[in-house]
Amino acid sequence: MERYGTLLFLLFSSFLDIRKREISIPVTLLFGLAGVVYSVRTGRTMTDYLIPLDIGILILGGSVLTRGQVGMGDGWMLLALGCMLRMECYIQMACIGMLLAAAYSGVLMLVFRKNRKTEIPLVPFLLLGYVGGMII
Image (cartoon, rainbow, N blue to C red; front, top):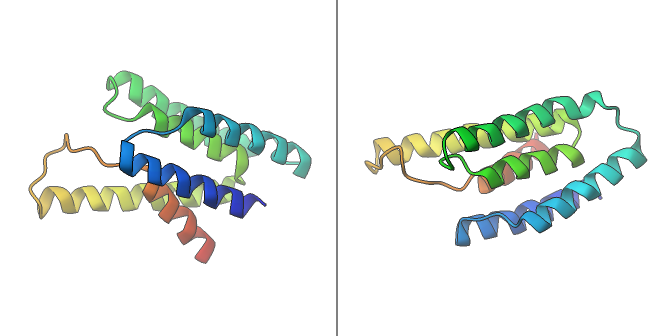
C-alpha cells in the first residue's frame, strides 16, 4: 500500500510539476493525511517524523526567505512524504532526488549555459530518488 500509493502520488505530482510548474496542494494534503493515518495504524513512533518534519520546514523557510525562488509546494510535498514514508526511506529518497537535481542543474549551467535563475521541477527528481531507493 505504502509503495504503490507513494509511487502513484509522485507520478501524478511529477506530471503536474513538469507540465504546469505547480503542485496540487489538495492532493498533497490528502496524501499527507493518509500518511498520518497509515503511520498511526502501523505503529510508527514520533521520532520517525522528526527529520522529515525538519527537512520540510527547512524547505518552506527557504521558500519564504528567497521570496519563492525555492518552491513552497516542494516543502509541502516533502512534509506529506514524511508523513507516509519511514525515516530511512524518506532520507534515501530525498538525498538521491536532491543530488540528481543538483547534477542536472550543474549540467544545465555548464553545458547549456543556463544561469542560476533557471527553474527546474524538484518532484520528478524525488520520484527518481524514490524509485532508486526501491531498487537499492
